[in-house]
Length: 491
Image 1 (cartoon, one colour):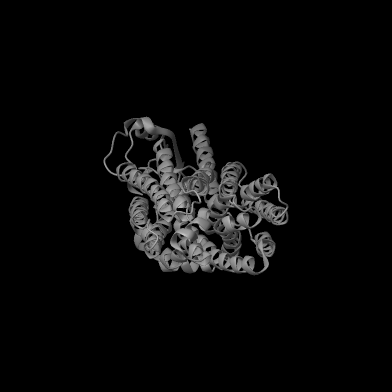
Image 2 (cartoon, one colour):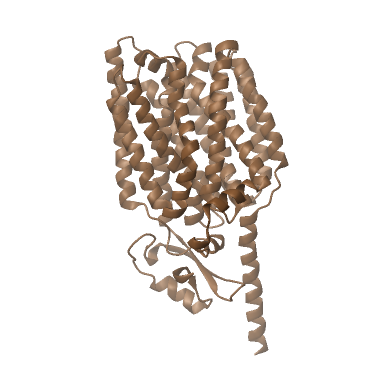
């Protein structure tokens, strides 16, 4: 393993921890950043895999969360004021829905080349591409703040959508590359929080920045201000990523990651990896069930403004606040689920429980939306969001467990591809159902598919391969220490 493998002597490990100084290039922190060091024997050769956890890992996850926040905001900021945007650009509601669905559609053809680039070029290249596209799309939209430039604003949204492809497959990969076995699920959930927080801000801020006024010129002024804010934030984050984002730590954070580093690039076939995943039955069931629940979330988020305004006319700001409630509750759910997984490793049981409660939350939301009490909608939306968006890191981490040692970016990419496909289908179908039969029928439509997804989740065989790899190394360490102790006593 070159630099990533050291001899299994206490003296050498201590010297490594003491002597490692500043390095040039990615992953070269100084000794002050070393907060964990362990040498675990490799059962095949008697050598050891030394692991370190670096404080810099928290900076990396913060930077990722920051630019995924910016991109998540850009996904939903049209939809949260869809009725205002319809008036400004003088287009139909379906056209505005496509400003959200373009994110879903773009993901499908781009995911395979992007996951290939993630494996071949690494995290830093992927982060730079994501940010370059994200801030470019945001500035194109600044230029589109005129009522006759709907096509340009769609193009800017398309560029931002391509940036999203470079973002959604990274959380599991980044968590595995930078974080230890006991915190990888928590790290993944923190990474996912960035997108969720961006969506939350995308629900909250646009209705405040862009009031529903009749004067088109005044409306254009407010929309331009909204676009300038998002473009400025995206540009600032891009600069930070260029300066601070690193590829990987010098030493692996876990034994599973040490083994993954041992695989020669020449031995890796992207096509073979995809085929292996497609032949993995538990993963394929998870991919479908993940697509059903996250696709439902995409549909609800896109159509939320229409659903709320239908029952509560003139409540654009509260519609945004309800969206905020869904996402903030989901952020809490994501973090709690990530911490719970790190402590219990109960991937299937937790996924099934969260899925089931997402269905219950959707039923409560469906049958209380038309009661005429906004405070009830806030409560039911919060319950729905806590479980439905809380499922995001669960799906990513469960997939990594089922597919190890395949690339985390590839498994996450396929999960997201499934979510985008179902998101498009659900958004179009639910929108048409709402137009013809109302919101109750549209939400029942989603409830049916969440019930199907719950049943599929129950069928997944829980084969936790990554956990087995870490446990095997721990057992080898115990045996090696026992043999050393026995030989010393014999001498």
